[in-house]
Amino acid sequence: MEEFISMFTSNTGAAQLTQSQAIIYSILAGVLGLVISLTYNKTGKRSKNFARTLIILPMLVCIVMIVVNGNLGTSLAVVGAFSLVRFRSLQGSSRDIGFIFFSMSVGIVCSIGAIGLACIITLIICAIHFILNACAYGSCGPEEKDLKITIPENLDYSDIFDDIFDKFTCWHKLLSVRTTNMGSLYEINYRVKLKDDSLEKSFLDDIRTRNGNLTVICGRCDINEADEL
Image 1 (cartoon, rainbow, N blue to C red):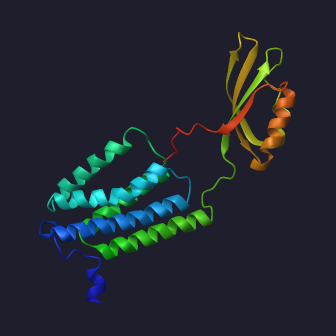
Image 2 (image 1 turned 60 degrees about the horizontal axis):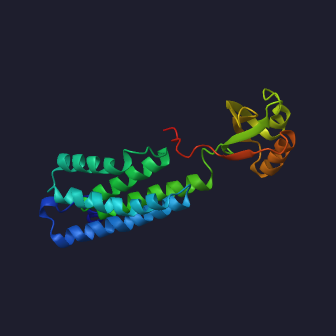
Image 3 (image 1 turned 135 degrees about the vertical axis):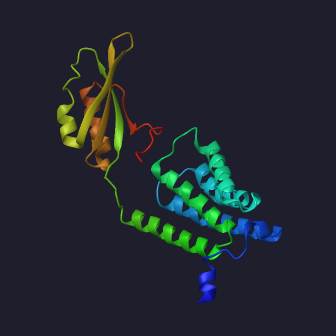
């Protein structure tokens, strides 16, 4: 029983750590970071660079915590400032931010020598991510998409596609209209949500027969738009 409890406590202060212990704790933090990175890759949209960062981040946090000689306030301040260098310029999604805090927390726990606790926390939270992903918790069905349609100037864009939208979309919203080609064409931008993503080709075919086979573009919403927290 005492051995089990000892896994959740630090028996060695940061100031008393030897160099070999510090290296071992950092390597173990990296191994747990690899588990976190694999979970990130398997449970949603992923970025190659971000997945690699999740492996390195726990090691860096662990090293910083150890180097500041056990001063908890100083170490947390250094780690916080250090993490802002990478993530201040571009706001990530709420999922990405959650994985950042996950990785940093594991690094902090490893730095105090509570390796058992770090392993258990990692396994539990990773399991939660897999379960939520498997049951599609919070999923809202088909994603919203941006639709750009070019029409000749002699067509009235106000309601020309309403019947097609009623047939294929849950809802649609007109975002903007602008003239192109010296005013001879209109480019109309919509935000739409399809009833069924498998009907996208039929949806675009109906539109291009209506707009005289001019350009029609349908794709993801701007990838730079951050998720709501």
